[in-house]
Image: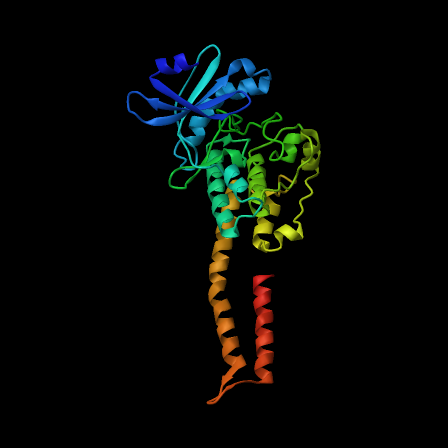
Length: 328
């Protein structure tokens, strides 16, 4: 394997990752001195026809998905020999989202931080879908970050084009993905579309807000698939008590078993922007309510603070209005 890479003009470095079918190493271009990561897939380990098809088209699909997509890991070179498929991709050394979730030791992400990640992830997925590519394995391990902290969706080994040459839709098939993150329609074994990625992104969002606990899981892959197929979404009060109604509503729409009602990636972005605008628009009224309530409640006397019953009534009324605004 290394000899083939050297012949292509790369100096091979240390191993930085390993998967079911291959290994990822650092590499350096002898021509430019630029550093990359090289993913090498051992074709002899691809016993399943679906896995062989995915490996055969990965380079092409990755190029299509990453072209002009700032939230996708870029691919720089690709070639294969009799036994290996090699992909030279952008080197991303910062901890991935899975590492970041684990580093919190079970503590949930603050909602604004989770929202920022979900927005960038939705942008990455939406850009892929616009190019006719479904990732089919969106999970924290494949959500990477560059040195500036920009999110990069990586590993298109399970990806597939869902648009035909004529621009028509081509349904996908196959049990592809990771058990915790696959959508119900994938588990059921029928045809499915690109919204499987939205479901997976919803699982990622849920795990960030829950401190790493997935919404659907079992002791084995088979049990997990059964739970996923039922899609009984719950928000344990001990974990989600401080999560906003807007975030829970978005999760319900992303993790919706009914595909026709499940959000697309573009709708996730639209909903996210609406939530931001709503929060911004409500801020001045909230501030005014609090200020006027305090002004009416507290009456300043020359010698001391004194409180009147009518001011107390006004304060209770205003706080009730405030509660309706914050918790509809």
